Every structure is written in structure tokens, then in C-alpha cells.
Length: 207
Image (cartoon, rainbow, N blue to C red; front, top):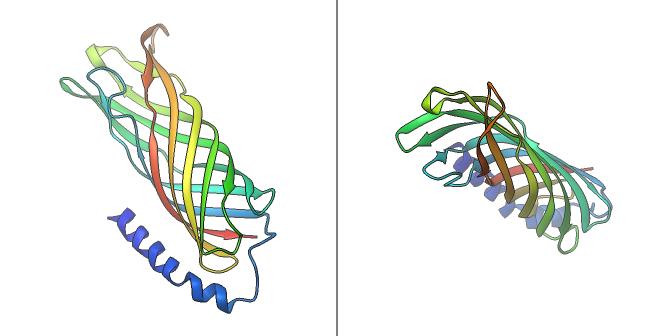
């Protein structure tokens, strides 16, 4: 319900964007820094290993961008808190893990800086901090290696005025992790497909 309420608020702000831009004599063009805060729903791959599943969940998200031009930019994005995920196997719950991704991406924003709707795409590199593993299938404690790899982003900014905007985005992170015995470090499973995707909404400001 929190995600739905945030989406509703952002949509209402977007509806007011056109008159707000018309009344404001400033411009978003030339502003080189932006920050965004919001909420993101993270969902791992539905079948990371045969017979296993990992739940996702919501978390606060933050990003900071440097806009090289009005169209090209570099974004640092990440979750501000960990997502506590339940791991289920063929016989039910086998434990939990906590994950917290962070990513650096290049982005291209379409159209003029003052357009009400500004779609964007991005491509970059991410890694996720895996911690708090409580995995004990068969009585053996297992840990996961740090997943890292490519991240792709699509989204749209809805300008409210030359400073403020609402953002909707979706991200896909492709990476693999190995499961290892905590006592010996020996691999018990390789190339686990965590591959999470996210859907997020937020409010941002340009400077």
C-alpha cells in the first residue's frame, strides 16, 4: 500500500507540471546536479537455483547524478536500506538473506530539459552487498558470494517546475553468485541466478 500511495502522489504532482512550468520563468537547462529519493520494490529472479525461490520487498532508494549536458549524465544509485529476503526450497523455508545493491550508470535523457515528460535509459555496473545469511539447508551453514554485473535502467522524469520532478524507473541487474560452506569455503552451488529487477518511484531536485 505504501508503494501505491507514493505512485498516486507522484502522479498527482505530474498532472500539475504543465501549468507550473508555464508560470515559472526559470529553466531546468544547464543545471548539472540532481538528487532523487523514493521507494523501490526489489524482486530477485523467480528461480535462482533448481527448486529454490527468493522473496523480494520494498526499500528506500537514493540517487545522485551529474549531468554532463542536458541529455547525458552519470548516476550513482542504491538502496538506503537492506531488503530482507526469505529463501524457500522444495520443503519450505531454508533461511533468509539481506541484500543491498549499489550501481554506477551512464544515462541518456531524451528531449529538452524543460519538457514535462523526459524518458531516459541507462547502462552501468552494480554489485550487491549480501549479508545476514541464515541459510542452513541440511544443517550446513551456507554463505553467498557478492553478486556483481551489468545493470540496465529505463525511466521517465515528470517535471513539476525547473527544480522539482517526479521519477518512475525500472532496473534489471544481471549477476551470478556462488553458495559456499561457511566452515570450509567449499562451493556447494555455482552461478545462482539472483538477477533482481526493481520498480521505483521518487521525487527529485536539480541544482
